[in-house]
Amino acid sequence: MIRTRLTELLGIRYPVVQAAMGYVSGPRLAAATSNAGGLGQIASATMSLAELEGAIAETAGRTGAPFGVNLRADAPDAAQRVKLIIAGRVPVVSFAQAPRPELISALKEAGVITIASAGARRHAEKAAAWGIDAVIATGSEGGGHVGAVPTSLLIPQVAAAVDIPVIAAGGFLDGRGLVAALAWGAAGVAMGTRFLLTSDSPVPDAVKQVYLAAGLDGTVVTTRVDGVPHRVLRTSMVDQLNREGRAGGLVRAARNAAAFRGRSGLSWREAIGQGRALHWGMGRRGTGRRGTGRRGTGRREGGLSWRQVLMAANTPVLLRAAMVDGRTDLGLMSSGQVAGLIEDLPSCAELIGAIMREAEVGLERIATLRSE
Image (cartoon, rainbow, N blue to C red; front, side, top):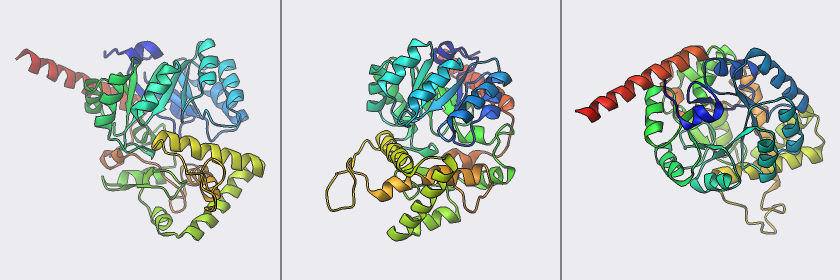
């Protein structure tokens, strides 16, 4: 059995974490991962408070093993969500964007283990200085919002910079990847696309088949979804987004913002505030750059244009269309590059078991080479 600082910290059998994915990482997938010996996570960003409370209770009812909730620290109701998580005795919380020190403190005082996400060394260093317990470092091969640094360069850099467990993400799907991550200084791996493509994933079968049909060139990084780099499957809808002019993109963004507001029950003021916070948080994670705030360019205070604010509401609407409704023609499918290497739909137990067997063989091979 491979034991690392991560397995000791989280109390899990294997150093494998299921990444949080909107409309995908619910009780079913999280519990299946945790029951298989990894760390399952609930993605709460697309849930209301009531939905999150129900998801926590359902997951706890499905597994007695540790699981986590992924939280957006910049959500307007983040403090309420933290209280809900503490009341629900959730053992682990991870942050989708830059965490807030006061939220980390509140969680740690309640005995909750905290994990931050980082796309650059400086992000990991800042989170570690705030008292975070571990960090997920995601390379550019990952799905969803990504930075520009490849995993093979990012992980050794982050592992050398912080004295907390580093979880490698971006391009992992098997035991060979786990061995590589351990060699780079990580204490485990996190996987999104690989867990999405399991029999325990709630994603419609038709959507899974689109993923399985993708090649290594089947993903693209685009800023046309919500204004920041986002790796998704290359589809006709994504190609259309990339061809759209400024006016077309604004119309689509406004329409989706209205749909998100109606579905979430937020007022226009709340929806725009949430979109602004979401875009700002994703910008800090990805590139670390801020807007210029110049007057006369249609920008709001803080450097964001109204178009960028509205575009941030595209993501939950388009993700739901694919991941819940099965509309591969209209929906957005976040994906890591590893989709081009995945050919099957194992259960979480089968997947993690295969990863660990392959990793043990790989480590034994390395030990043999050392002894020769």
